[in-house]
Length: 164
Image (cartoon, rainbow, N blue to C red; front, side, top):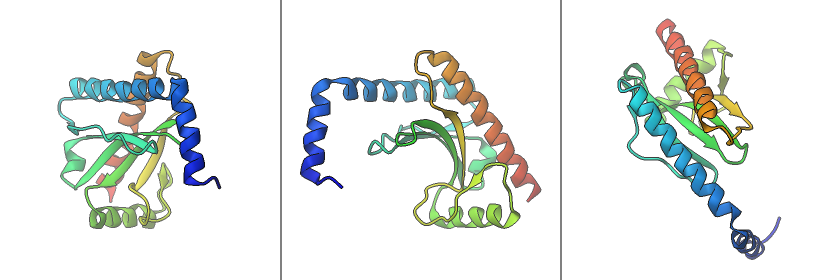
């Protein structure tokens, strides 16, 4: 494993090329535009005020229907930098809520979407890949795919919760 100094030298080298800054800025602008699009299109949903930029590990914002919010649950639309894909996560507003619902999903044997193996070290309860290997050449199409996927994910979660 490279040392911190070696990583910083590589970081400086890559920054000198300019592509990382342009890509990161474009991704953050896209995430903000996606958030605004969903907020305008679905005013009945809670959309978080801020965009969590992360440490180049994940960038996300919350997009949740009232029924989930009342249970202290939220949906996060996540760009997973390492996997380079968009994901949807069901999360709790705090660890006790997350643990309670994780146990419910785990004990049910639900396999419609991935239930995380443990709450320790995870910020989610259930995860779903919205777009694998996104194509950033057509942002309108990408937004449509994310929107369709997130609405289906939310629907699946709401159905599960209504039955349990």
